[in-house]
Length: 203
Image (cartoon, one colour):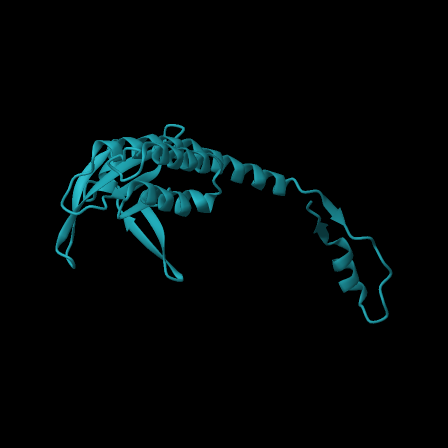
């Protein structure tokens, strides 16, 4: 019988799960990078939750958007020491804290890891431990950090793809309508406006 790791998985299952997520991160679409990848990380690591907080370049806040039924729930935190996510963003170091659930009366250990893209802060990935009143073990922490290192370059790659798509669209050739004789019901003024209006044709 295969020996199980501290995550309740066999070593081969853990390695397969880690490789699958690593491959997904490298080819992820933007929406997958921000929603699907955290979900897969949470499942692999047995976490209560994993959230990707993005940096808002206008306000410098960090925000996470998480599906909540048919709606998207947004959470924002300032980039300051008032939260573990904010602290990780300003120190650019892995940070730890306890988070208490006032409803259930329990506390969970939280880890926040900064996500860097090209030396710039793209956001912070937050993991809330699945076991209450227990700090996260070294095995989970090691895997989490290893996979987060891949998210930064993937974020930069996603932005590059967006920029390339935007440039291709802006270079779309402009063609003009062929001039046609005005119909009896069309005034010459309106005909001039329609004939001179450029039309854009994109591949």
